[in-house]
Length: 366
Image (tube, rainbow, N blue to C red; front, side, top):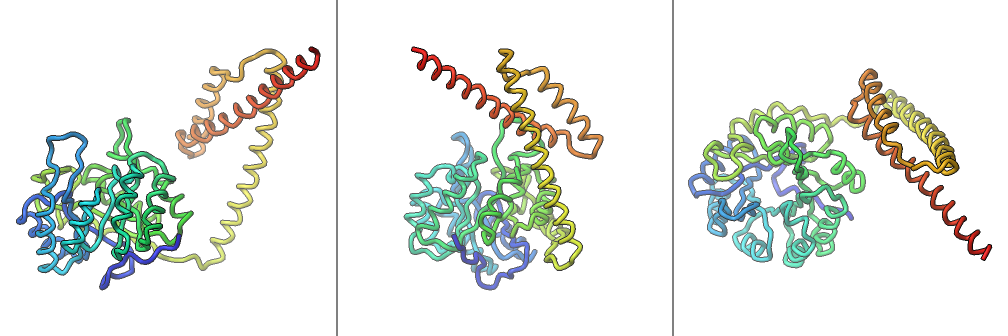
């Protein structure tokens, strides 16, 4: 897929592209006040949720179409472009009718191929930027599938929003960033703009600067930050919203590293990485050969493949060694779990092959 620029007229191509505004459009006064303050920071794209899908009924679910009128009034006064989320065919028609400049598809909607296809069909012939948030679950192919549905509908001004992935575990994040997933997406589609949503990843305004900086260091195109004139009084997600003044401070303190590799030194270091990766693969191949030998031994001595006590000892010992070598113990465990999984697979192949051979021998004897 080849994507066209999502930059609207008059917006600089430099990073970061910034989209800011409240989680929800609550009242006309709140929208106008926030828009004025956001515009004063230099931000060119204003966001606000008009239809709010909540986990349970009873919470504030958005004002709906009347809020679109407020947003367009804000556009007339401030000159900012307007962006909102759509989840149904009706939402798309309403947003386009009022003249919204940019749309995004939310995480819950992105997880539903039927809903994405409905939106894609409705957007045929539309020439405005469309952003797609990652699905709530960490499924890269589902995320790419949503992109493909829009692309196949003729939408070329496409980008994505990384808002993290839902988890039942208690962590410092509201949604786990799992940076490797958007990184892999960028590897597959180098010209795809990726916008970071630090508000939803962190779930707390104190984390917005740190997450925004991490996104910039990973060469993301921009950020979408929930910004409210009175965040402590917000009707939805108040903990993750910041004031326009705080937004300006975040943006002013971002370090943008745009230098392209031009020095020989980095090439030399990358050559070293290539050599070390080759050595790692050779070592892994040797380890798997030993694992297969152990598999044959277990087969001959009628031993089960999984030796839980031994596996636990390896994980504990190697994690400790990794920490002493200034490598994260968690990372070491993840690597060893992957290696162990492949070792088990190879030993299972040996067991299955022997079982199949025994069956064939028995059938021949009969």
